[in-house]
Image 1: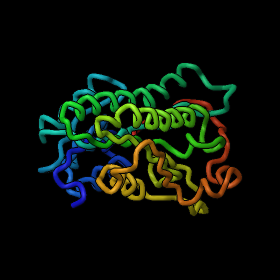
Image 2: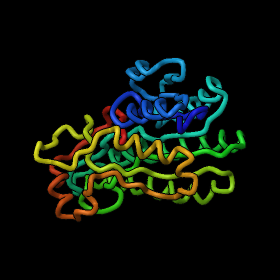
Image 3: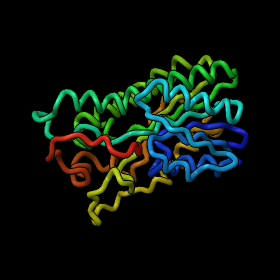
Image 4: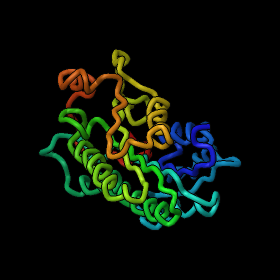
Amino acid sequence: MGLGGRVAVVTGASHGIGRAIAQRLLGEGASVVAADVDPAGRELEGERVRFVPCDVRSEDDVEAAVAAAGDAFGRLDVLVNNAGAGGAYGPIPELRAEEWDATFELLVRSVMLGTKHAARAMIAGGRGGSIVSTASIAGMFGGAAPMAYSAAKAAVISMAQTASVELAGHGIRVNAVCPGVIDTDMVPDRSPEVVATGRPEDVAAAVAYLAGDDARFVTGQALVVDGGVMAGGADYSRELFGTPRRAGLDLGPRRGA
């Protein structure tokens, strides 16, 4: 197996992309700490899986999830910062500052916390490692999603680039994966005419690649998994995503993307 003997922590592992990532890493031979606020992740538990309740906005919870890898399996090799939700949405003139802040707390602070504590554990272990964060094509060009979500995902990409340089001397690679439209509960209004809809397993395959030795010379990158949306340009993206029509806050299931 490509990740045999490795130990990974996956946040937002109870559903959608996060669950697919956890299952793919298990299939590659890794042991996995599945971290999520939703106890549905307990369904994954087995000989090589531990479920840990984790609100990724809480530093104590994130630190405990990382520590659980060492406690259960003796090491940490991979961290996947995947937990997320839609956050603040709607036209810019109607955005509420507190909803903007809540979006960045969930989508950006969480990635900083995960990267911080995983880096500590990996440095202490002396074996290097791989950190992969779920960003989005929304963070790469305008018009792909509401402003707060897009700005937050751009920050996730930037953090991967910056951390990759800082941690390179410790043998720690840091990358982001950028999904397009993926068939999860985060995209409940998909039109059947939308053909560029991927599956959670498509993103999981990209994460497994970035986590493993085949990507040993890949760091500081944002790997796009979007079925050609970026290649299709802005007009195509607007057909898929539309424009913000509502104002509000979606901090529902933390499912990444």
